[in-house]
Length: 242
Image (cartoon, rainbow, N blue to C red; front, top):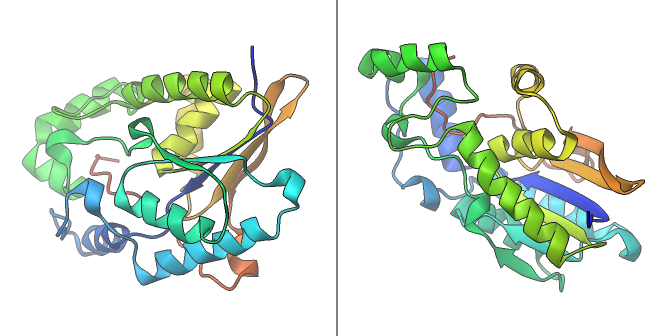
């Protein structure tokens, strides 16, 4: 099978919705105070700083290790992160809707508390089915997102064989790329989601090793500290019972 030389995924910088969701969860609110649809949520000032710091990290990479191409989620927070991080470079940028965030359907904009209060049957169904297979009405399961990522990976391997590819996306995508690239099981993936929170502008990297991609960095934020930006680990808006 054709393989990439390097694959990175950068989660977008802190968004205004990340800040709102953290406040809502901490206060026990049922609703997250959102003023935009999910696709239009912008970066916070901290998120902009994180994206610029990621750009300074990229600028310090040797020419032989810099990305050949970037592929970006069409959601505004990812687009803004890519623009700030890639400013001043000549790296070709493509948007791909398969990198969008997971769609939550009727649970969109609710905290975990809000889901349990307003949709107790869905909370019970999710508990019964498990996080991996549960699909909220009008939304996507993790397996739905894995399917679109699987097709994207196939296209990247075919169209950019031997290249270094940089993705800008969302936290669930980081986990699911590990699932797909490394052949994790459902149990292994779910254990990983319980152990880790994907940081804003974190870097996860795989490099070719004997014809396969091998994980070389996961959820790394050292570049932010080195470049003077504050790491944050707010969850995405993800109104699921925990």
